[in-house]
Length: 340
Ligand SMILES: [Zn+2]
Image 1 (tube, rainbow, N blue to C red):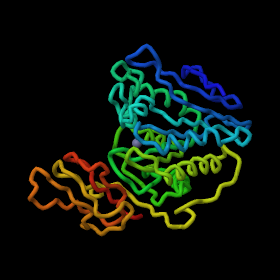
Image 2: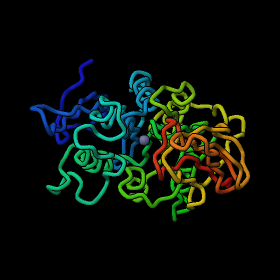
Image 3: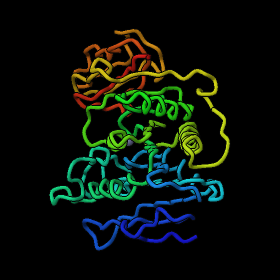
Image 4: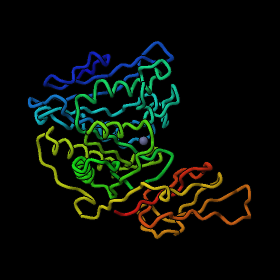
């Protein structure tokens, strides 16, 4: 199998067949290229503007998505593809190879880079904004289903979830929620839509069926997380007409134990009032009442003081907590979703 080094403008994402590319975007600092692995499988029934794209490594230190998609590169057979499937296991190679959340070359967070002028204006011309421009120019016009596989990185441990924003269009929202449920994760999460520059927000605004995930944390590979990611992508491809086949529900979806939670108001997020060290008392996924102590924040500079109680701001489910023990002042150390 040959994987061709190709400029974005020379990609063929439309002709029937399978093509494996290294999408080459010019490097900012060396004489060379950033190489994004992209495999496209196009079936005989492909329609303009229709297809599924799945991204891994939007952030560089999240590994379940890249691993799940790397498996799917080999598992999905061209003969079974009806429409168009685009797999991008590592969307941000600069961050992935550095093992960091932001790109190593320009320090930009790709999931904040989908802003006006990205990759077009001189002030936003470094690699991360040019990746956003590549997605806008080449991918968005060809897909109606967008899967963006994230994990918690160093920031937070999670109860694995498939996530989306609350949207005005009830039909789009219904289809997105159903697509999210098929991942099989214990939680389905609806989250606030205030953060600018998110890849999924832009896809949603364009009317696409868009699902994000948190499949693990701590720069490790969580076995369940990989399974959820693989299942969610395959189910979306089958249910949205891009892949032939049958699929059965798994895990919490199959068992009927999935819980839907909302993270939309400020009270869901408990903010660290000082820099310290975090000790969890509960696991993610635990049910809590408003005011329950979820963990302690310790101040080792004032070692004889009582730890500060990190309390649930609302009644619901502990969705996430700080992972790495050292905590910055202002960090969200406990995140509780309201059941809905
Ligand atoms: Zn991420």
